[in-house]
Image (cartoon, rainbow, N blue to C red; front, side, top):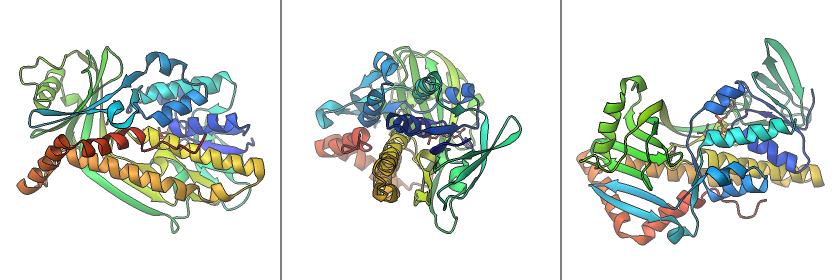
Length: 393
Ligand code: APR
Ligand code: PHB
């Protein structure tokens, strides 16, 4: 098999890239290790920045998003029993849209399959060859058989554990990483959500109330990394959430059946550069943010917008300038986004290693944000617009 761009991974990065390239008349094949059912079922975050929403609209992939997405105009942060309310349109002129990442993935996969464009499931990439030549080859196994995809460029969109980053010359790549010693226990519950996205920093730890629809809440608690989600019964979860949200009389947060539980470890990670020869990395393959701020999907979409623009310039006018600048162009935004997500994590969680002095400094920062419109505007602007690429299609 042969194509112009071989894409490894059918997460948001790989799927958006394939659609963006197709819109420019560039062929690609997506190789995805997992089954379609598995890939569509992975529960992740669900906050779309305007840049992501506009990209879906430009690709004509936003019909369900427009029907089912919830426009979110508020971001609340609680501490000491008080609430800082950030009015996103008032502070930034924009808002975000709540729409689960797996819904985005379902929509993009359905459009790809319906168009009859190649998206091969249960195709595990094992090795990438010839990235320093003009004809790299991707080796993969499908149904127990070894196969090869010949291409002109390789896009490693295959997440943190993928084959893309592993194929980079290890002496040319620098890894930056911080692993946190706590995790997020996430649940989905059939319960009316709170009106606003609400983060809380309580003495008992961090909590977050988000939503997926008017009937389904997406809720998170900071827990130890070795916590077992099955040990969090419904009643234990609700009790802890009420306490951390300062909802002592349990009147504010509606309870309901918890039908999904997952544990996410927290990590900040960047690999640089994001390219070598004809191999280009995008999304979680090359950077991970801690989940506060819900930036992962938005970063991945922005990466592949830069990449598809650069590949278009190459195929259309033979220009290599944008391709050569891909990594540098992305990394400036990536570092800002990792910084924002890390800062929000630092502001809102309880750290075992914090001394009483550090705990007071954290609360002082929240007091400052509570009293300063400028501080609120800085947070709101980054929450909404960090991955907006105003000069790109
Ligand atoms: N061969 C083929 N596919 C692979 C391989 C491999 N060797 N290794 C991993 N994959 C697939 C995974 O099964 C997964 O479907 O690559 C895909 C990577 O998708 P994501 O992990 O969703 O990563 P990305 O597309 O970069 O999306 C970034 O998604 O992971 C979340 O939190 C992350 O929100 C962020 C966003
Ligand atoms: C989510 O809705 O899953 C979500 C929202 C905000 C975050 C992280 C996750 O910061």
